[in-house]
Length: 404
Length: 162
Ligand code: FES
Image (cartoon, rainbow over all chains, first blue to last red):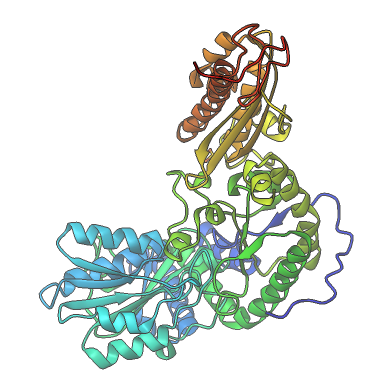
């Protein structure tokens, strides 16, 4: 990684609000808000209605479908709008599993998928399907060879995420796609939720049959998502009801949300390159500056093959939740994969699958950067974090015993 | 709309946040009379208590903790609750009392309150064990395990056999 030689920090303002948790959700883009508002005010119609009120809503949805399709290089008809990324992933796995169960009942997923894929796979196991969970290496990378070896004549679907939500590792999707294509008629799904807006998306280059998106991950509204389903791929809907989304997703559409998702996709198609460049520059500044100021600091994930705005660190001898609270007191919002920060008090399944040791996982600290972050904000973190770490290490029985 | 920093996402009471932000009695005691460590870095928490005993009372209590906000607040309040108490009194401190003293803990953080009382009790037991093993049989003064004679009364402590 390039390190920034002049990471002399400027004097940041004393009291800032710094949002470095874009992996959880992103703020709405102002232009997206503008696009949505008319659909909350007067364009309230039900798109299924033939009258002019319904037609206005229908027009909004159809424009959004074009925008999302253009964003990922698909045809508009191949887009199904959902209520979020979780629904898109559920629809992909369950929809394909049920449509193709007469062909076979075996699925392959990576072990560091988002829970909306992993837990769906678990449910499918309860319903009689078999699932292979692919291991990852210390960087969080899936080995395409493992996919090849896991395939049986029963395999109907492989699902590997494009980017990991925690450590930011980018998977070799195109390579895996090649293996799958060469083998047989297995469908390939990728969860692109964490990748959208950070890396270029093109379903042809990726070679996937299904791809999931979530609006809130690239400056669109919450409660919106989309699933790309390649033409000719049959899928069983999750909901029964009306014929919305050509019978694949019943229920009156979230018109304003879909319009917002479309606008966000349009902006992201234009801006992904700029956002990536911007967040990468800030990330390198942050990492170089922290390395200078904090010892026993480790990078989780791959040094290069990762999302540009993702900096997942382990601050050894301190616990993630304590770090988060003290950062929050300084106005800095970040996240952690430590056990104590999770409701169930289990440390991150991603770090575990990567073989990161327990103490290191406990000290994990995730900064995920976005388009609106500034250099001054990074410098503010560089100023605030080191004394916080020092303070917690001063309290930590592990620190003293390790260094004695 | 601005939310208060630090407490927004963790559901901690004011008192927990106060102790977390300004923990009392952090540190180690040089030559402690008892030390108790509980927890395991694999589960994400390690707590060490150090105690000094004077006349059967805890004259000093200090701690070091690796853990969440609740764990640090628990350590802090336990150290406060225990200081000045007799050993027997300190042994009756329960996790329920600790949680109550902190104005409650989120349900999934109750286990952190067990750690505090456990570590304190372990430190006291450590002291009692040490003192049980190492008292001069003649004057009851404290002695080290390998001492050849009692420093308090001067009696010979080497077992010469028969
Ligand atoms: S120390 Fe882990 S939850 Fe409290």
